[in-house]
Length: 620
Image (tube, rainbow, N blue to C red; front, top):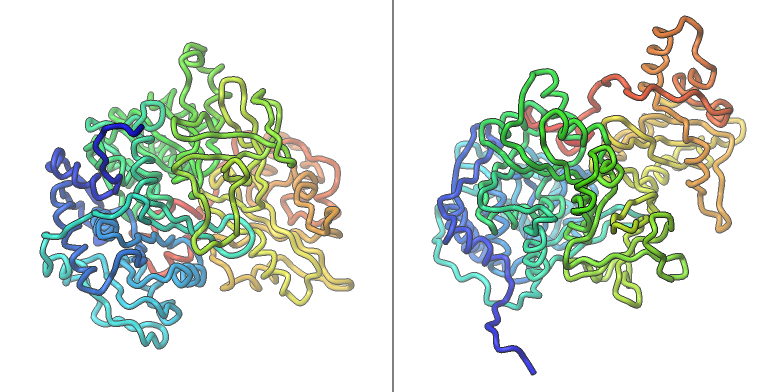
């Protein structure tokens, strides 16, 4: 027997329809790429998104076609999102922090027919357009006054039909456009993840999965958003739908504040302060910059109530600083592109909330509990379930209507087990309170400032150096970026080399922010039983390694405190960490609070950006 209830397809156009009808006057504030603060409303975004839909239809875009975006968090980007999805096309968010060759590969694999791009990233598109045979149109998110005088791809692009002005398209087309009318299982968004071996893999979200994810995020024990909130999504829209906030905020009628290209501490604080932001979400690096700015400027956070921190493990010092200095609750979260991305959140249970704050901290540092709609399990390598005792380490697997069932175009083959769970590639524990904690990564990616760096890609390129016999890349702790990569090299017999030789060899072959922070020459690179590099053993041997700049500062502080020379092992880390030294007896523990360090270079994707855009600084 079937229920006797109305049925309506859960499509995301209904989210912005709702926002326009019931919260039409609610503001969306953007720090524009051109510079000024721009104010609009959900009603205006809805109107302009429909104009975008008509513009796309006029360009020949059909349901199922992929339309790329290479852009910051702005109201224009939101208009394009809903305009693309509303007519059944697929919004493919491209990550500008990837190396240009990766962007080209991903756009080709997706088969993008058009790309919306911000002024900041136009040089990237110009540089790769001749490698994108499926791209016919590039729409620049700007007005006629800021259009470039001439635009020339770096090479011949026979299918490219010209650069279009976004504001001209919006003005030229009507807002009378029918949205929806298709099955809720229709593809809505596409986002690529490249955290493992091999080529990047596309996660294809459906309208239904995005709609259900929106409802999940609004749960009080998830983000708990309401129309009373003022939300600043610092996490980019090209990171799994800005963690869903680009749907959740209009879904509940909350005011949105979009940071655009400037995400340094001072710029973020300005928006938090002037717009009365109550909720925000970002990776730890952003909050480190904000807290440093607050410390230097004496600023306060009277309106901010909650921040969600994910993308990398959140240090205890950040959680304590927000809570103890500014009375802001930190929710530590975990998820993946494949999980839409909400997976777990460290919201305290009623029982834990009654404990003293110091006793809550071990749970706040964990990745947390799954919300309604998400299931977790731990298994051993044979696929047998493990207990939730906080001690049993197992493969973390996840299931639910917001979790990927397969990758775009079948990449990676079957990805679900017999019970329909997706293997996250992480090793974790789950305690008796239901709090999950990731203890290791089965994947060997390096996570730096919330972005993933493929160790294998760097290894394979470095192995091309004529003096290299074997190479390995691991991530080592960094006080600001969470992890930074270092390259271990076993040289061919009789060869000698310098760190600079290998860094120069990598130059131009990988993104600048992927560049290893050190090159360590070792006598051997251990192999496991199957002939693969044993990175677990390498990490064990390197557990006391400290990056050169940090080690030098640590040694300097040690010398200040005591006139005796620092121990040889500490000097070894400071002067380059050669094999015979780095595998030597353990050095003394480094100081608990490393001193400030110089900012890393801006990401490769921003190489041609103006000075304001370069101040973004959210990742190295």
